[in-house]
Length: 346
Image 1 (cartoon, rainbow, N blue to C red):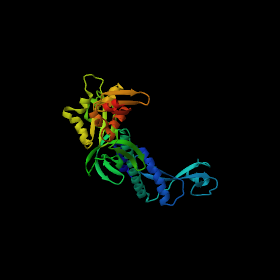
Image 2: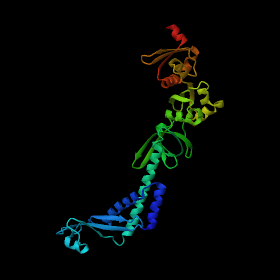
Image 3: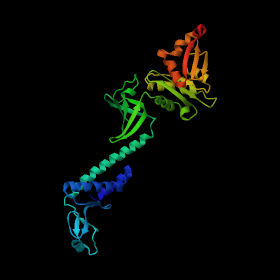
Image 4: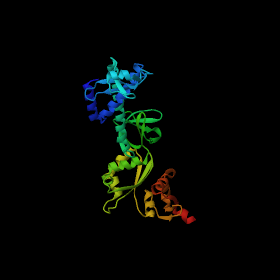
């Protein structure tokens, strides 16, 4: 190794943020193993890399003793005095034992250590960048897939989209650009693993935050989200400002904002309802698009009995109970829906 190598480490420290001294210490530790392996030595050695000019020295460490039992680890007091008369028993002497062709091994080992540390540092940077983005939305390109995952290229790393986190309406080809929701970031021996979803309710919430400036600015607040991915969703919104229509803000001029989200979610229907502090009003709104005549609240068991016009019963319940089910998820209330005629018969 030479001064150019030290300069390269200095530049690496600037570019990658990898401490040069830590790198050199790692190289020194690796060179000890390399020396013992290649030269079949059981000596107690230390490797020293000059921080300025890159010269590598192998130093054998021997203990001064009266009588030598193991010449690989010990040196006699008499021999030590020939080097320096001040040496005493139990002192440690370092003697250079650098082999002639050790430079080649040193260069090869240093390259391996530096490459490994760069890889580790880059993995650490990626992990740090994405661990703070859990429950956030990212855009990537579809790369490939197997039986378990679709692999999404995020630029410097890949995200794993489990097959069971795909919407039923999702059909992707290589190179398609898609938005996904980060559910979990894990640190593994192979580097950071980023798991994403297309079915998570958080995806819908983040899409509204991207498309509706009033939500991003905090003027409109998302209170609750209920989702059956690929089919239908409900989102409850609210604004403390009387002059702001939270539902209208989310729909956008001529429905352009919500339509952008519907397109991203492959045609998923989205009901935007106004949140209310009054449970009756909120439950009535949540059953949109159906009309509601009355809502009776039973606090015990958090149950709500809802009466709707006869012609609105199927709409209120929805296909296979979907509308009622989503309204219950959105509000947190169990909802029992009856028509006017059903109530009058009783």
